Image (cartoon, rainbow, N blue to C red; front, side):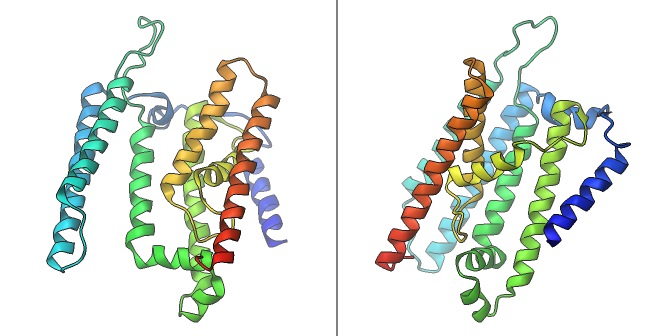
Length: 272
């Protein structure tokens, strides 16, 4: 009931701020550029090189620290293969995105990495680090996996849950900014309709468990890519919205079924 009350109250605040449902155009150049403009080809290559160099530094530092402590480490050839694989993936991606994608170059140019891509990449790196390399991230997994066990281990379950909701709200706000940039306007229906269902579906399709305690940030990104491919690809093929909803629902149901079966099997074998 508190959630429902908050939802209704904030809807009323939005309507009040937007003059009871008026459409407000977004004219700020910075906001418009987020989802509608691209980086220069040179800057795209520079960011890709910086990302590869940073990843290589992290991998080598981790390898050296583990070796210094006498811990099991991956062979240096494996580390080099990881760095090389990332370099190839980013190189191909930047090369493709730097190609001219506009059908009428005289009117507009669509060459370069979209500005929103490095924003997503930065958020992916930051939250992956938080979840996998900090005690706070381990506490999140613990609370999601078994709240009672986490409580008995001395973890403040309520504090973890509240902080996660705050972070999720902040990420939703960033998503709202990107959505407003893409549409060049906002109205009371912005972010409504099937956006929430797609957001949940993207995480589940990527491999995040509905039951908690399992999942990675990159899973949500990959799941979002799958949803985007279904939505955009079937749209380009001329399929109706109804067909796209059916296909997305089937994919989501399959992902949820696999998750439920895997957890049941793990519980039966005692490996959970």
